[in-house]
Length: 254
Image 1 (cartoon, rainbow, N blue to C red):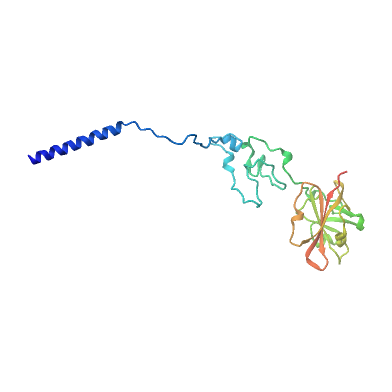
Image 2: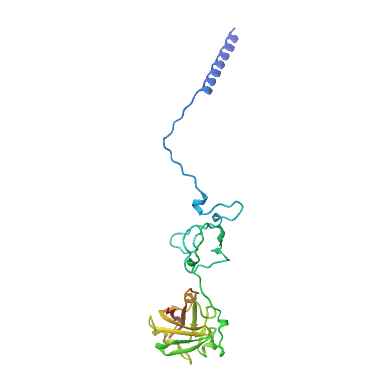
């Protein structure tokens, strides 16, 4: 009898638990949250990169470069909608900093790209073997220019830096400052605005001095290619072999 009552009690308890679980499963729950929740709006590829995404093809996002710390110099990030800085080197036809031009929705104006000028001095040899004649009226200098920054060339006049242009762009010329037949040590006395002329098989150009500087003999930055036409003259600084006198003159627009 006692066993029977125990079994009946267990059965009743199980029935009660079953009924409670059914009620819970059927209960109607209602959750409330804060009103007016804000979410980030959907981001359009076109609005971010300024071009349509091409499935299976090259896209602007494929060329995105790491952001540079503020104050550093380097290549312009391809997502920055700015003109390329002066001196930017273009690689490949129609490419901008190595990025295919056909992935852009906007064409970069050719006028905004700063392109350097260069003339091969090998095309300028005159009958006497020189490539030009440099004259500085205020110093009484008039000398022929020979290809190559060599003692052989400077024994006959001035030497032309072979890495620089012969006519268009930046023409680099060097000479002895003293102790030789042809010297240009007095270029250190030139003033801004003084005139320099350069005559070649292509004609004569008139330049005006824009700067007179003393530079280290390891500083070659003044010989870099330029878009404008200029003459860069260098010579040793007397009693200071670690330095050079560097004069730059920009073509005078007539």
